[in-house]
Image 1 (cartoon, rainbow, N blue to C red):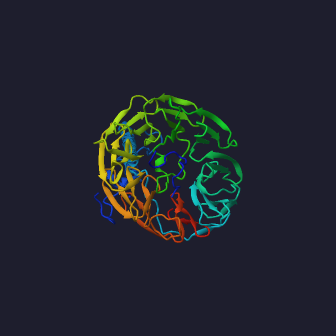
Image 2 (cartoon, rainbow, N blue to C red; image 1 turned 90 degrees about the vertical axis):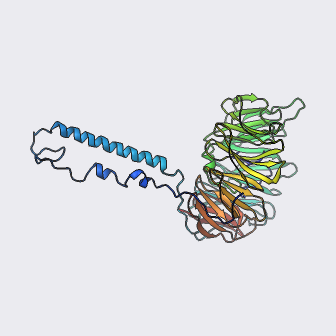
Length: 526
């Protein structure tokens, strides 16, 4: 399966968190941001008119609602007037609240500012030219480096203060390492392939001590849901649910469906939600800290072209296998209650299934000819899915297409040669192009190319992004960085000096990167 990794886990052989109609450097042409307080004639403090500081005085010398002498009665018309004023005030306040909800942006502009001075964090083992990585979850940053003898050192630091919390070599040694993932209850490190196997090691995020480890196959798939590690064990032809906090004990096991010829190939993807694709993510679209408990379903696509929906925590098969859905290597996306499939057979079309029942599919889009290929299925707004469409897999013919996931039909298409990655950004989309140098484009909700620039870009949330002026590198470099809120001018943050930019991770305020000999944290917002 190709496309951004929405499995909340790790596919073997892909880089870890670590582009027509546009002119490079063109400025955005968004409409000005909506100010809800200035809309529809509403003033900043409407309650002042509804409740004046001084009550009106009536001809008999009394103030509204207050009698001049004890025992005097309040005329009925004045009581009615009081309640009319109160009711009108409630209506006005209700209108204001409604306007705020409707017009106030869900993802307002971050408070971007120049990069702070670096806070340096010492490694647990020497930083070498071998594997190095950073990731951020919540208020903690985690770093990894590998010594010359293959020992992995992991360090935790307070993302806000830069305080080093612990350093640990407890993961041990391997020929090399390739992954670092932060879960709520564990830090996961996965080694590179060695003699057809890899090591998966889990450390305690509180102190760096070893929780447990397991030997896995070189092409096994690992993904995460709630407090469960889901392992697609291809050697044993099974799915396993491993307890993160229970020493890796097997919670559940399911055998893979097979074909009559004995083939048992499989693909497993996690079901994502709109919140999952609005969190900080790498330039490849891999979330650093997506919520793992908002939808714990997974979908298994098997060699017999069947699909089934499984509860990742319990192993319960929620929807029985449906036949003739997809091949394991077809592009699929399980998102927001739907299973989207780009079929590889003679149909050359994109279809959608209801995940609750996997009934008859809705045909969303049919390709114009039999040479069409789809890749990079990704959500790109409410009830919308985007893909890269090519003719005979020729990258020069690439165009980004947006399809209505609810009603079907193509919403728009934009020719963008060499596009090989799509990253959702609210209703907009980042499209990375495999050129020299690499480029990235921002596409608006209507498919308009807002800008195309050298370098890379990545999502901070559903309305903000980071821009890197150079391609991301695993060698020390000094790319200039900018922050941008959709619809606003970019804010230059300054050069990110002396870091291996391909190792960087971030939340909405802090960058965490591997430098030449240590690790650094730099604040850019908040």
